[in-house]
Structure formats: structure tokens, C-alpha cells
Image (cartoon, rainbow, N blue to C red; front, side):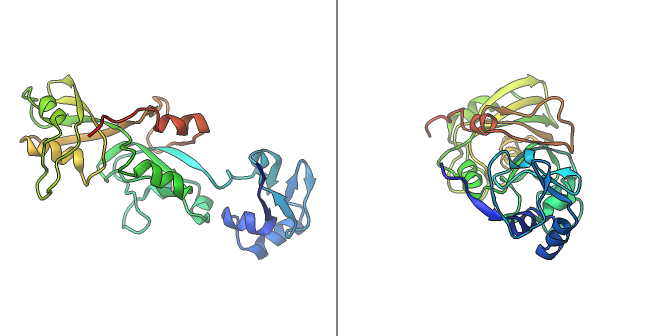
Amino acid sequence: MKIPTSRLDRLLANLGYGSRREIQMLARRGLITLDGAPVFDAEARMAVAPDLSARMVVDGEALDPLPGLVLMLHKPLGVTCSHREAGPLVYGLLPPRWRRRDPALSTVGRLDKETSGLLLLTDDGALLHRIISPKHHVPKRYLVSLARPLNGTEAGVFATGTLMLEGEEKPLLPAEMEVLGAREAALTVHEGRYHQVRRMFAALGNHVEALHRDRMGALALPADLKPGQWMALGQAEIDAIFAVKAPTP
């Protein structure tokens, strides 16, 4: 496979290191090195190989991850999946320079402000659309705490594929529910409608008090990834998102 190339100043500017003029100043000062040797020419073309981040140092730090970045973030409560809304945003949990990347990092779908757990971010538009595409129905598991005890009928209703949400004309796909306690359950859904899990329990007369997503496909949120922390995913972990097939609707 042919390795793409890029001018050094354009590559670093797109990674958020500054304007091309600022990159040129870094190069002239010997603050950009490749394999230990200074790169003084900011207009030099670089092979953008997967190992470049391990070989290049910018102002004393290893080069940031290249485009094609996929992050798993443990979204805490109280932050919003938006670039524009008021209040704390998930992007504020990332290194400040990463907010200037081009292409930009975007959340893969959303978790509302009062939902915590596994959230993916990427600058790979094709991958983003593949994950959220209705054609793939990537399973997503949520841990649910309820205001009232379960009545024993919920799992059967959710599994039928006939439940209608208020204001909608198409029934939900079948969903799988596991009882974890009198007021606790794990619910796996295969689509991403607006506030879907909350509305599913509301349709059965209950109220979701706490909601946490812990799995997408076969990709699980690590127990040691604390709220607000993130990790970059490798190809095997990305493949795990698609490893679990949804039931045929």
C-alpha cells in the first residue's frame, strides 16, 4: 500500500500545533526532530507512515496521533457531547491542541448530559458513519437504575420488536434485557433513537434515574478507565465494535 506524504508544516498545522508560520519557527529553532535529527525545512515532504508519531518529536514531546484517530472516552456525568452548547463539553476533557485538529474529532453519536460511560470520538468520517449507520445496528449495552421496581414484563415486551415510543410511527427493534436487581437492569439496544432507553422504560410506566453505557458491540469500557479519562484504540479494538451481530429485524 502506498504511504501518503504531506508537507511538514501542513501536517503539523492540521494536528493543531499552530499556523504554518508558527510551525516554520519551530523548525528553524531545531524543535522538530525525526529519528533524532532536526528537521529545519518546514516545507519538506514527510511520509505519513503509522510509525511517524513514534519517530518525530515536536518541542520536546512525541508527535500527536495521526489522522485516523479513534478514542474511547469514559464520559462523566454533567458534560455535553457538543461543540457549541453552554457548560462543560466532552472536548474539554481532551488535550487543548486536539480541539484544533483538521479533520476535527467528533463524537460517534451522543450520550446525554445525565448519561455516563463509553463514548467514542474519531476524525475518521467513514468509520463514524459506519458505526452509527442503521444498516449495521451496532449493539449498545446500558446499565439502568430505575425509580420503581421491575414488574417482570419488561424483558418480554422489549424483545418483541413491537414497542412503539410516543410520537413515533415505527416500532423499536427487539432489545435484550437482563435483570440485575429489583430496580436495576442491563439493556442492549440495536439502534440509537433520541433518549431511547429512557423512553422505553417510560413507555412501561417507569423512570430511569441513572444510565451508564458500558459496551458497544464487543468493545467494553475498561474497569480502570476512570470518568474523564480516554484511551486511543487500536485496530483490534475498533474491529470489536462490529464483532457482535444484531438480530435480524
